[in-house]
Length: 240
Image (tube, rainbow, N blue to C red; front, top):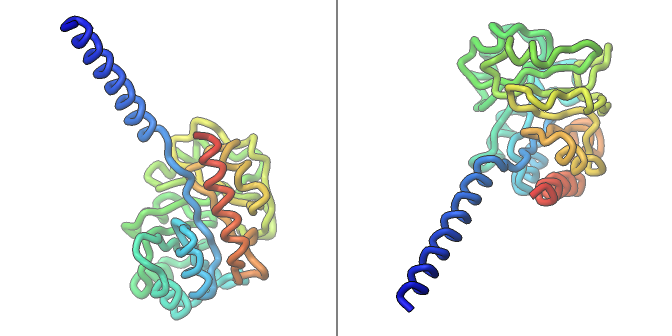
């Protein structure tokens, strides 16, 4: 009887240990897919997105873009956000003085460089930054990951010769390497109809959407944002 109890205790301990090991390793290896919604122009849309669980909102400081915001708009949008929602400022080959002006007046958590900025220009502000990569033919992601080794991530977007992003076009996801040393943020042509597929096929760190959740450029749609975030979460759930 004593031997049986001792064996049973041993079995219970082994099961407990195995379960703990699995849970620890599972929590280490599994990470939910983050969601960034870019191109907000209205505070109410950003507040709605935050309520839906978005991780980051993107503000575009690029005058040619229909989603461009000035500093006053940006401050209003940021003030509408609750705690723990990151604010990303997008620039395209912008002058250093302008970027510093924005940083002085708008609470920004992360910079996104969407032009041809070299790594030295991206890192000079003492802020976390992402480098956008427009996926033209012949692009070398591994080489870029080395150049921008201190970036918080590489944002992969569709290439269009006449635009710097926000085109709503998708590129061939098969071109994304599976062993990139930096977190991959997938952008370009995403919406509620392919968000789940993107999560399952690519397993990116995050998805970045803009036109796919809009009723018109710069105006977000609550139902589309809801559906997009739901599909991302569903993609994660199925992978589990």
